[in-house]
Image 1 (cartoon, helix red, strand yellow):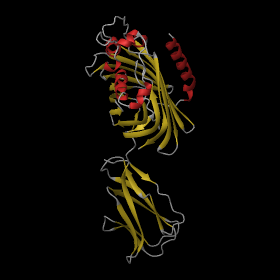
Image 2 (image 1 turned 90 degrees about the vertical axis):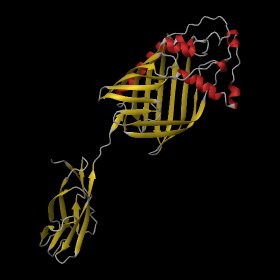
Image 3 (image 1 turned 45 degrees about the vertical axis):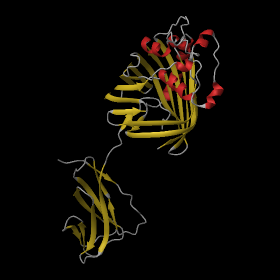
Image 4 (image 1 turned 60 degrees about the vertical axis):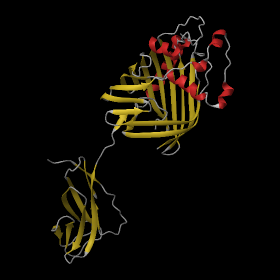
Length: 275
Length: 123
């Protein structure tokens, strides 16, 4: 319930500033490639997992008359007007990334310092490195409604990678504006992840918990998130970058024996260069 | 079929020593291979005191001739072109007074798309 309250406060706060916000951003067609150097980290909500860090943040975008690519999101516009965008879109599911990121970080010796000892009996029975999940790719339909007061978007996406057969639905509100020379963006959103998706990633099998009897209550659930981005130009191609995101996991995920925290954050701060 | 043409206004060089100013110096179309029609003005800065003619690089005959041109006096020409040309102004004795390339260009407006997600680069 606290998540909904906090989310409501953020929505109200964003409504207060939206009067000064600009329309959602138009970008020239063609390639748009940029790279940021700095420091970023993600709190991995999985138990016994390491918090991935990075010093580089790439950004690759491409737009033509109908097709678009924004990093791992690909789409084809069925309709694009001033007030409505209808896209067929494919995107990466983020739940699988936590398992993959954890596996990558285990290869780094420095992460030994972040190692979390197992604490409870159930955790003592789980060999977390043995728990593996595949990254899934989703496809579906996205509707976006740009207005002078921000952009509302809805989307429904199903697993097209035959990993779990589940789906997730998105509701997002995005706002962008300028502050002197700086540009800022704010996004508030919720995503509903269905039972099949949540169970695949967060329900531990009896083998994984070594036959330990524990009641698992994973299930379809709503996550909420807020995200801020700030760019301050230094020169035509260089700019300061700050981006941060906070996610509140729904009870269906937060209750998992594999999850240690009901919320997590990620951030990156550095200097970007647009090619 | 006539295609609309956009004229690029050249910035006159007030301190230029050129005896003639040509404006515009380019003819711009909005579609590939479209004929471009431009109203050209040749303005005298210092004046021409002997009979002279305007020649187009892809046409043998003179476009127009004048007996003399007082300072600030103008010659107006309508040109149709499908490629870049040169205009020369020569005296009847063949002495070159001024030469000016007139570019042929295709205007391609920058098309934009609406960014979908909120990435870290908003610029």
